Amino acid sequence: MNIPNDLIKDKKILLAVTGSIAIYKTLELVRNFVKAGAEVKVVMSQSAKKFIAPLTFETLTSNQVLDDTNESWANEHNHIQTTEWADIMVIAPATANTIAKLANAIADNMLLQCALAFSGMKILAPSANTNMLENPITQANLKMLGISNYTILETQTKELACKTVGDGAMAEPLDIFYQTCRELLKEEFWEHRRVIVTGGGTIEKIDEVRYISNFSSGKMASALATALYLKGADVNLIATKFDSDLPVNMHKIEVEDSEEMLEYLVDSIRIAKKGKLSKPTLVRDEHIHVIQKKPYLFMAAAVSDYVPEFPQDSKLKKENLGEKWELGLKKNIDILSSIDKEGITVIGFKAEIDKDKAKENAKEMLQKKGLDGVCLNILDNAQSFGSDDNEIEFITAHKDVLLPRDDKLSVSFEIVKNAKELQE
Image 1 (tube, rainbow, N blue to C red):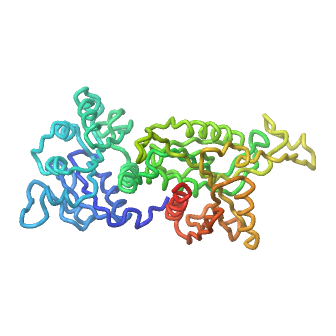
Image 2: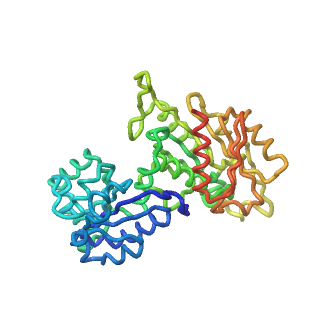
Image 3: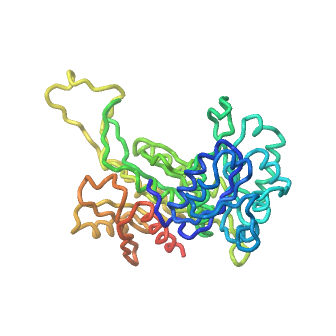
């Protein structure tokens, strides 16, 4: 998925790096931040400088690195004004030693002084040997930080620098990037709100090796789910295809055919209405009454209109079929028409090649299926499927809004913005 160069434009990130071999991954993280439009300043521990020279970070960020040797009170290059400048602080990698000191408010180096002085949310990506990470004292320190304005990212289980296989590897740079962007971009409206997104073309089996499907790539659904995740929503992506670089902790369900998609969708809607989420969805309104945020469904999947009437459990052999073979098809269930839409805002997607009738068909879909909105995508031809950009017309009962062609993540943010207005 392409990262828009204005995703976090003008956001200010203070990146702290400690003495771990995982620091080489942080270079990629810096590139992602800068590519997405953020301004980045780096603070290094003395141990970190043994792995990478400050000049490397200064080259990537175009800002002077702050460390124990160069703090100045004649300008803003100090731990107070630097932390006042920042919108968020990210500590990646964070060694067990740094974690222990953070948990006990020790500030005996420049990095720790910055962490203690920064009052906003801090994202921490641990990196340590398995035994060091799983030491009960380290675990207690992480729990202490978890209730002290830190977001702790999970480590990975893989072969570590010490050649042992175990838990302790730092989270991937892209996942740290997504978590940082989520913290910077989240909105109260979407935060903890349950949102379901469906995507990809359904795969309807003819036999064990053949199927009916379509050209839908699932890219739009993945981009839309990512945009909603970054806005703070509790996203459940139900799809036949996914982008490979989705946020690791986004909830995803891989399905195959329309029957399986419907099954998971109905269950997800039921759970969403009850508010049983990974995080609380309850907020208080101005009258101090507890209310539940109304969920959303974005139906971006391309569900087959017809399915094989008699799918086979084993492979069909041409020797038994003869010179001609007629495949019997039956009309498939209309998922959007069949689901219970009470208490949930539903937005459908419609792809059209006939430009003359596209809007008319979209408005008919809006009315007949009882939707709150339709995202109309007019395609030039079948080869338009799978592209990295899109143009959408967001249609409701009251207005039509053209969302100009852009990369699919940028278009998704515009869809999210218009969808929000349906409940405001």
